[in-house]
Length: 165
Length: 416
Image 1: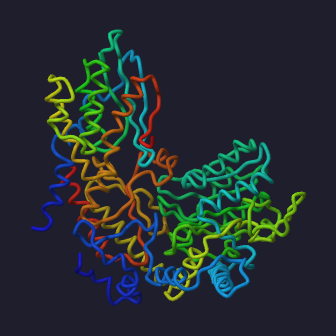
Image 2: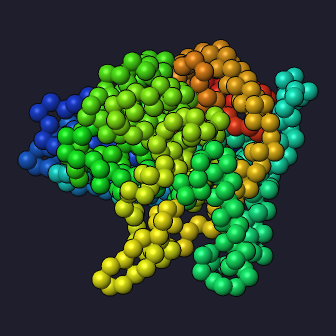
Image 3: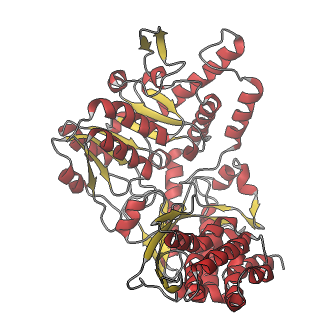
């Protein structure tokens, strides 16, 4: 059947875990007493994600949340990001950013992503690997990485970022 | 999809014959027949235009307005013939009033940078509307920042129409310029431009029309519209990219300083003083988009071979069918339902972001625009960050509307 692979592509992109997080995002709120805040813009589509975090003196993300408007991929990515990194160090956040970025662009596979982060994030990598469906849809990679860019800006003390950097 | 709907054949307007002129429409995307519903962003090109470009580069190419040799004369004649085709197409009184630019954006920026910087002072007002494309907002913001003038906004109603009363509220004695879309690129609304012209002129203001969508869907007679500037791009009119037109009244062009300095726009140059060539050359510094202009001329020739009233009727029928069909898909809300609108339809689907929708539609071969359509202020007013937009052109069919609807239902399966 000729049409089947097409649907598979779409099914890989819009798998259950993405649709679930896209429709019912976790940590969709503003962190109370946040220590940093940054907005990520995708000027191409107008999507906007605001990330807020409360970072402890020891450099731990005690709370991480986001708000905004975006497509299913973008919202799911932000939701899974907030789940994965709450309670983690900012150093881990940077490492996971790299891993997710490389997963989405097809540079590394799930096992390599797991090797790049601490073992306790293994389950999160399994979930986040669902974002790698975007590699078949190059224009959508930015949708997946936008929240992560906003997070890095937030942790670096910047207030704005865009996907067009 | 290949099954033709009744209304695609037998009508006075033979859409299948027209389609045969557009080679790209025969291709497949992701293994599906291409259903191109994004002509408001850029239209596809007929073979006649493609051939003309190839012929110009292959046989008749040289720089214009310079060489005293045969090829340059031929290229110059072809370039100037294109200007005459444009003049006739918009019924401009004089060839001097037709300035070639690299696009509509440049045409509007040209007016802001020359006429605006010369004649607009601090406290003067420029009226735009809330449906404008960024290209008819940002140039005026730049002018505002440079001069201290004030931007005033005529508000759009919920259905996407803009009542003339809204213009009456914001046009006044301080108004220097009214700069509005002829037809909205997001909503398809046809603005009441003749009434706007009357109000503008009563107030002593000039009227600029952004005609990017207008010239595609309406007859444009700049004298009848009674505007002062009319800007449009070639690529939305089935012509090449890199070419646009600014039409302006001759007296205005005479009074405006040049836009850019360079070759082709001078009368004489000494280090002490340079005098300008008369319009339109004054505004066409440097080597112009020669072949693009020739291509635009051939696109106009092509349109002139069609019965444009029949084209308009065909596009209206497509729009009506699309609006009815879309309204029957659960969860779809139409954005822009003003009476008499052009064949552009925005919509949102509950629970599905336009980008996700466009990705799924693409896999069915259906090309639509998803996003803010370079009209972010309008999106904010509409309370959405983005919409999905299907725009219909002279080569689209009822069967393609059916394909859009089928793809939308499939998207609901995937996304909801």
